[in-house]
Length: 80
Image (cartoon, rainbow, N blue to C red; front, side):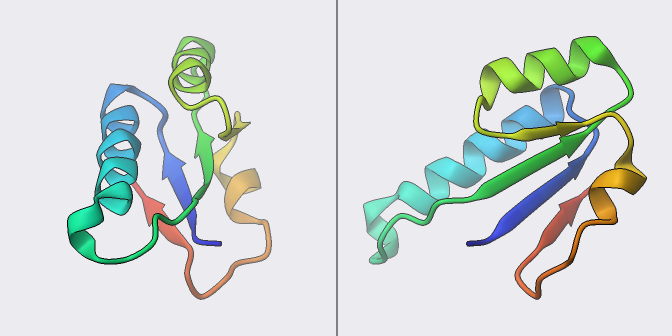
C-alpha cells in the first residue's frame, strides 16, 4: 500500500490528501481506487488535531524525524 508522509499537517497538507484521494478514486483513470497509508508530522498540536479531524485514518507524529525513521518502502512519498 502506498504511503504518503507529510512534513507539516496544516491546511495545505489537508488539501493535498483530499485531492490525491479524489484523483485515485476517479473512475476516468480506468483503474481501481487505491487506498493510502497516511502519516503526518507537525509540532503544532492544533495542526495535528485539525489534520486528524480531516484525515481520521492518518498516523500523527510530533516529530518529523520520528516519522521518517520508520522503515521505508520504494513506493513511499514524502511531501514537504
